[in-house]
Image (cartoon, rainbow, N blue to C red; front, side, top):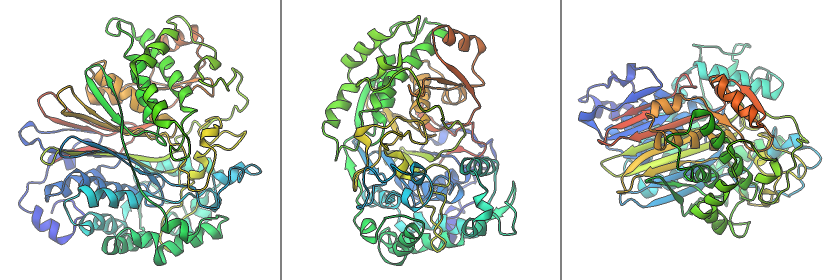
Length: 581
């Protein structure tokens, strides 16, 4: 019997279709069979990718696949995804038009700019850290507009999985360990609500054990039959809000009822002979694309040595992250479209390229558009663990022409370190993504007035989902990442290595990554970087810090020149993977 969570009807429909050998291949990579090219889906969990693939096998399209896959990831990786969070998606429709679906969390109506001034830690743990979740509304919006299968059909597989139980894999073990370390206490065992799932026998589950999400399964079942409104009104909403308030939060039922998805125009720029399409503020697609637009201005890229191109990549990243400090929710910050348009223009990129020296890095203030940052680092603490609560999924479907790149998050690992005991929904801590005057957030970003808290405002996100088309308008890539502030740099580097350097997607994903967000004033190099490259960066004045792999996780689809689909999961995650129909 094929592995599937689509229910009895789906199993009957699939019974005449040979089970793909993808079920038994190495989980991090799968190349589409040229004789059967049709569609692809990729996520951090091969089983969730298989679910999305199966949905397309029974007549679904890329949107059906993405909804089922994302809800599945919310079950298998509830520590950084789920309906208690929110995010962004870039959608390509059957006619080649693009839409950005903004289902980012929003601040409660009672939120104020100074609510964390006396206790910044309250933006990380507890009910006050929780913003109004948007994921479920976003998934339903996309499904209503683009999906082909019934809503219940795409939602119920995740419910079945949550009830049947999931096996603790190597990725979950790593994230549990990181979450406990970040929290400074073993909350998964000490907190009864968490322990019901992660320590039912009094000790933390380990590799190969099975965990059950029965409350979450029942919540998803209700949503499957009643729609997303079941979570935003009625008993499910009341339970979620009650947990937020009981743990110190200010969210109300009216906050839940009034949440709305925003349909936004995508941002885009050209890079070599390709067009890159992404999500603008409050996402950070402009920062990712600005990095690439700057790199495009170097006309000797094919002949420059690795040490020099790495330096230029770092410099482009520093300028792009410097520009990020002026971004904010366009409903609250005037001039966002014009500012992002300038960041993506060739004229702006040429001006920045003229400032980049090949022999040295520059003082920090030279990269900052409003010159607020000095060279000294007043806040040396900076997270370097894999402590991020984000996932990325992507899907493309040739027959319908639909494609989507979607990033979703509860912010840090295990969100606000609270779970609603009645619905099983993990509470996000998205309020930490706002700027607190005088305080850095958990990913080291300096406070920015454009990102100060306002009621109903959406905090600035590092999410950078990208779709790529060629000069003929054909879809060529769907890319995005998880990893907090490292999302931007990781996504840009994979795109750069495929579109500029000509690497295969698999090789681009395996290549060592750097991260430099300007402040803290350091460049983080994965251990796999060549020592000579690190030495060259130091000679040019870069503050090099070595870090282990796993600070970012990219998921991507590449459609090759002959139309073959290549779907590659993040090799730094042991259980990620892409599958094709």
